[in-house]
Image (cartoon, rainbow, N blue to C red; front, side):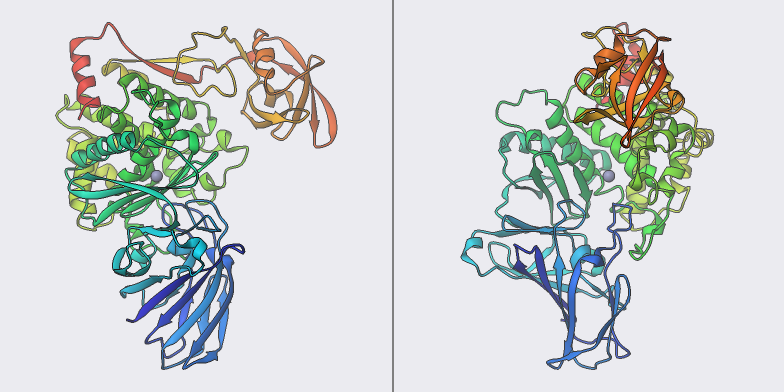
Length: 601
Ligand SMILES: [Zn+2]
């Protein structure tokens, strides 16, 4: 064995793993080791090495010198014998991106725990996970998609990885997680849930089988996998996911999981969870295998730039919801509601006129991943607008080819000719391939909507597929769009800001460019305490504002920091940025056929 890591569950109360790394034949000039600065799939420098608390090196049973040469790198004194490093890692980040350990469970991504020995990146490596000796943890088990070498029935023991890249692409969950399995394309799929939760496993099994199968059918096959694992950490209000080659780490809220009482049509929360699973599973092809050439291999020491994240996150976001309706797990109405919400998210941000989604992809490291209160005004999401671009691309190809071709053909081509053959995609190559596979010249399309900032032709395209595109004003801060305003009074004016509850009033969290609040001088961070001398709070502010017609003047009292200020606000007419889609009942036969081709695989 050349490279071997051993992880011991050292101190759950101090949240520390103890890791030992043995290198049989270290670099004679002095071995260099480093920890990644970021984790693939999450495009932000996180400097995981900050969590290494203590580190020591030894050889021939003697301590040898180890010195830090930059924030993530160490150099060890030369030795010709086996080198052993021992270090403690602090693990108290409850997210899918790093590591978390206490007396309830242990979770880690290899990028947070495993120092990479330079020049050994492509060597096989072994990982031993030690069973904790304390009888309190007697019922703990290991869940991971890493290949077993010699493990006990509870999964403790030795695993083997092809190389360092493989080693860090299989997160590990250790604890009392509940699990069940199902089969897709003759491959075992497992779901594991950590945290206090209740769920109807029969329902999850049935819905997930259909969704996973829909993705496999679209691509033509599942990539060669030993198994696939959905690992979910369940908390009171969690949400998030990170894709890996044979598994995914997810976080969801307790209420997102279905109980036996779940109606046939999933409620909004369960639908979100299904969408999350669907999204990460689609990544098994799109980003884990079909990937930018710039990511082959990943340089985990610094930012790696690409304009293509719209294709990997946007196209994935389009298909994650499309697969829910194609697999008949949700209805067409429910799908159109989701689509209406995505359109609403994009239309509410004027940043879409300042940043293209190609730029948003490239600048992800400093803008999308480091959003502040100005995000809606200054940037666009390559997830949300990327998903709509994928929708428009799909509908354009279908329309131009009379349904002979679609985005499905483009994705299959990318899988067979790039992902499956491990060939990376150069910048701009996906656009060229889309034109080539569909036979439709899409250069103007990409120029306008991917590299330019023009609004997508959603209304006209959706109408060809029998769907009416409607816009209305926003009713409240909780109004996500996707539905008509049937039960609430008509809104005619808007203050042009978003609020959150605050102990003395409402705190402004976003102020939209050129709308009433900004023109009056209000800013994010201000706390509004009164409108026209009446106290406001989160539960009455929408009602108060909506009761005034456009062009009315309001006197607003607000704190900026601890200074009370008075603002005169002229209410502008409400902008129509909330979208809802409806099936056109007087649909023409051809459009009905288009819709069926689009929504059913
Ligand atoms: Zn994603």
